[in-house]
Image (cartoon, rainbow, N blue to C red):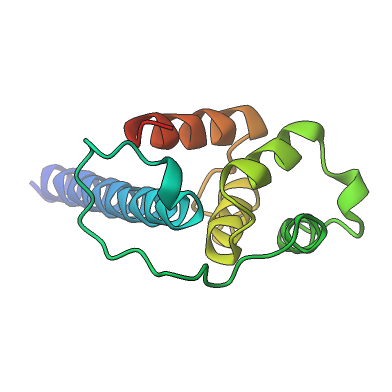
Length: 136
């Protein structure tokens, strides 16, 4: 009986952790999507409903060099020239916004050991999917 209960408990814990991770990922995706909206409000398809207020002036937006430098530091690189071209493209696609780059950095080099790092191709695919949802 103990083994059955213990196995069930371990399974429930694993399921709960997976659900929490999924919720966290969905929240990060939503924030990224909102940041893309903030970066490119004039390009968003007007037929797509947006449930956030877009600020009149961009907030926490870097120049290209600042954005690349910031992402480099987020993932532990000393120089932004060490970033692969795909990472530079990703930065451009999110408009060099600080929070978006921070989330991308956490995808590539997560702080938590429980989270699996994403490769650049998967991150690019995610960003393109979010942009497509917005008609970009």
